Image 1: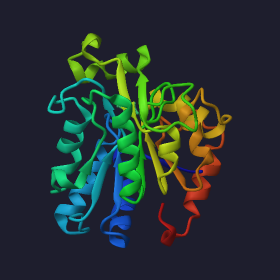
Image 2 (image 1 turned 135 degrees about the vertical axis):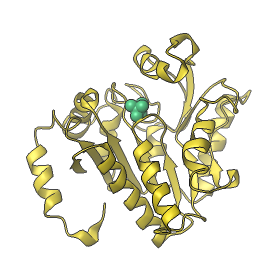
Image 3 (image 1 turned 60 degrees about the vertical axis):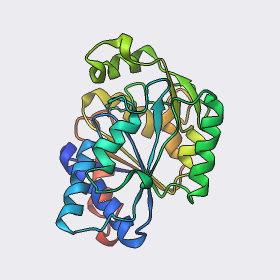
Image 4 (image 1 turned 90 degrees about the horizontal axis):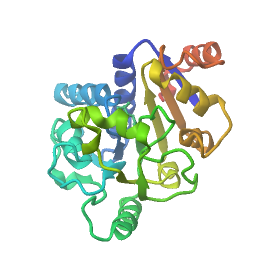
Length: 261
Ligand code: PGA
């Protein structure tokens, strides 16, 4: 996989937004898989700036969700549907019709998961999937020991993830749902390009285990090693545990500009 070390979160956001813009110039109706959490926000801000300045036309872009809480009403401000509409779909000037996600309120959760996998395939598959990484190495909400072949399904969050996400629920862990629907690791690996962004020292250990450790279900993000086109963008703090950091820096510095991410 390619590892790009950037000075800070903003530079990472700009780099990934430019990769998305380049994709949309090549393929205006591209399906962009987006992630929630704090880390990807600089990507959405940079892409929105490009759209508003006319640097890229995103009017035909399609957006899809990675995961969703089970049981939160769709219009709850912290449902991932609401978050993606607020942070991505609306700023880009897109309509809800351009957006797809799993139904976290469905009575038959497994049917909703299967429907979502089918919908992604029917849409032609995800062109670029943006990922964050949990402090425990999760991608989407595939917690440690998720099957590397998993498809979209229900998962139970670890205590650590619920602690990490309590900040979105007024700091009250009791408000964080226990269950989620997440694209499986196998589903995520179906995307044509995976781009993982990690910033801050709190992610350094998970990043090193994912990039330089063995492929293991214990570290779900290590599955990116199995993908032919995976890019890991990290700031200096998140890169601080990488043994090959100097090699990654030299490789990226010598990369031909036309190649993009
Ligand atoms: P964060 O979440 O960007 O808010 O740290 C990442 C994740 O849990 O995937």
